[in-house]
Image (tube, rainbow, N blue to C red; front, side, top):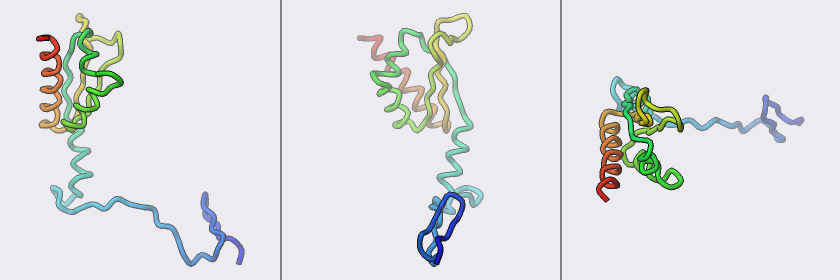
Length: 123
């Protein structure tokens, strides 16, 4: 029997077996019957908070190799984005930090950032 062809895939044997693309399994425990975890992630990303941090403190927030910002993001569940060098809040030398996620995640991330800056300023 000749090979069985599909666009981008070729089977060298008879077409008795077939590939099924893997699909995430959604639980039906979410609000409105939507698959909880996946649906909520998109909803959580709709909230954001932007505030300024002095340019000289950005290194404390980011950490060596991005370690601090990655740990804070993972611990809080929020996405933390810092503006590029030279991209300041108008009229200041403060860089923009935008935190995106659920309200609780935003609050946790904001507190972690402020605590890290306050701790470094005290020492």
